[in-house]
Amino acid sequence: MKHINTALAIIALAASSTAFAAVSFDTFDTNGDGVISQKEASVNAQLVEIFADLDTDSNGELSKEEFAKVQ
Image 1 (spheres, one colour):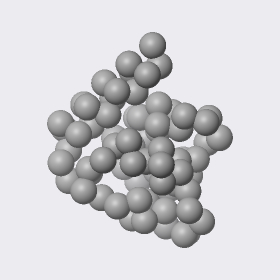
Image 2 (cartoon, helix red, strand yellow):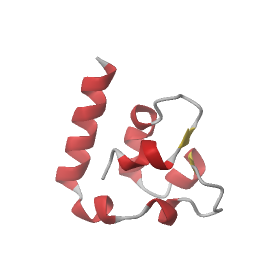
Image 3 (tube, one colour):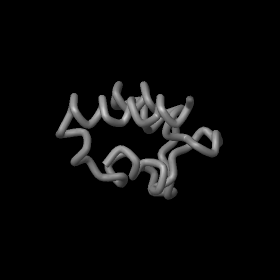
């Protein structure tokens, strides 16, 4: 069920914001540590909304691979 919810969230995000999909990982990784923290994600309401679904390893951060699911 989580995979379905993640897929639906990603589809909704892509459909609702073409500009967001064009944003690079590095735009959100403001401290350059190679992951997007919840604090870094907080600048975008859409990313905050689907953060938990994208964070497949549940470590509270998004890797480049996890973030790539949006694009």
